[in-house]
Image 1: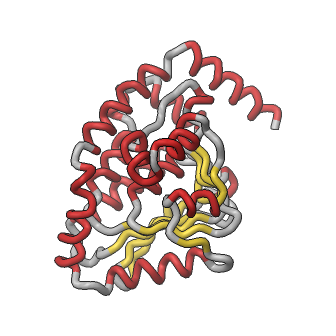
Image 2: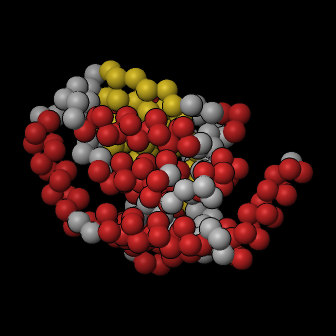
Amino acid sequence: MIRISLENGVQTLCLDRPEKKNALTGQMYTDLSEALEQGNTDDKVRCQFICGQPEAFTSGNDIGDFLQFAGKMQMSETPVYRFLRALVGNQKPMVAAIDGIAVGVGATLLMHCDMVFASPRAVIHTPFIDLGLVPEAGSSLLGPKIMGHARAFELLCLGRPFSAQKAYQAGLVNEIVEDGVDAVAKACAEEIAAKPPEAMALSRKFLWEESANLSERVDAEAKVFANRLTSPEAISAFQAFMAQKSKA
């Protein structure tokens, strides 16, 4: 589930499914999307703050849940796609706090954040190619912009996990917080929310305008991603993943 609250101009979106390491279901994607979409038109929301649970920001898609709806509808109709569009369309500053694993979309959504704080035990991992898929959420555009080609390739294509320190060195994380990462990140969100909102919105828009074709990239990735879901490589990888999961 997603716990949503609003305080001091900060809308907190807390991923709260610890028994599944915050694996994201269709309903969780829908709740996140609605919160981001509504926040765009709510003057009381001056900053979005997303966090998870101790040791788990999110393990990414709930594979079983994802495969159920992915096989029954067009990619553009899925809750995942709506969330990706909500990320691109988000007009408020966004801060994230990572404690533990940030896998798949849990990693790529960080590229849409304005400030990212991580605990020393944070691990960022994008195993898309290992599953026979491709990167999503516009990460193929944002990754090289943030980290440079070499590091983006290492994370998105080679699929090597990034420690908090490596993510910080790559520019994906702003600060490593030894203790109380959620509190430090939320304090930053409140600092942002206290700034003059119109000046903040205009300034942030200038910073993001260089990624004006981000929307097109998300669509292009989603189209290839959908085709890859039925590829022999992906089917084999998912079968192996589910078999391994059933033994755990």
